[in-house]
Length: 252
Image 1 (cartoon, rainbow, N blue to C red):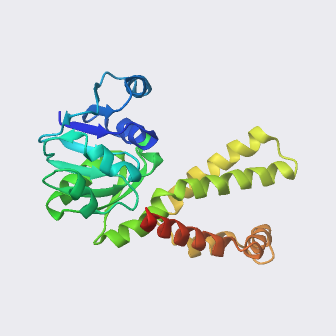
Image 2 (image 1 turned 135 degrees about the vertical axis):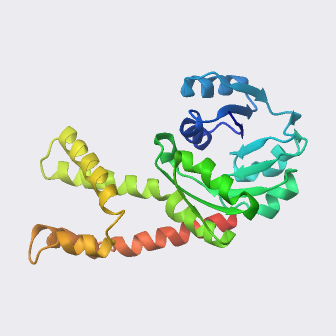
Image 3 (image 1 turned 90 degrees about the vertical axis):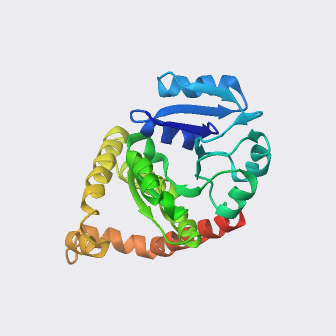
């Protein structure tokens, strides 16, 4: 069983590890052994744990999951040369990663939190020689899409990487709207979850515009609610969210 070495033990690392642990041996490196112990407990399997100082990455397959601002400081604490570095750091270029971590290859990846349930939408770019291996590895946690440039990955980060937060806001708001009109909270939440579960399947094969048109009959309830969303500039706000997140990725 191939070993994947996680540098960093935050929420994204945990989500990815949960998706990979059935097919890969998990090793995790961090600064605090108590946090590493919690990481192991959350996975509910036995893993190899190491403190970061002078950790040797020779020939290892690294999943790099630290904060973008910590690339230099973490890189300085590692020894050796990795086989490949898979980075999940938003806005952190291949060049910057190679400048701070010795490795034969670098692949930038952008999973999302759905990795923990095997349903991430993960975008990738970097060393083409690792394209197939990267897609197989990250395919263990959901769908993958290899992109031609780092600019495209930064844009995709705003869509797929940050997207769960946007959809969570919409989900909560829709449930709140139902409660406001008199539906019990538990009922509203259960119905909202069913809505999102079904929609996830529909959107795989139907263009959003066609899906919308199929639901919205003339003068009906959907048309009335849809009009309210347009009045609230929801479409424009979603487009602005992608732009703002993309620009923030460039700043990082």
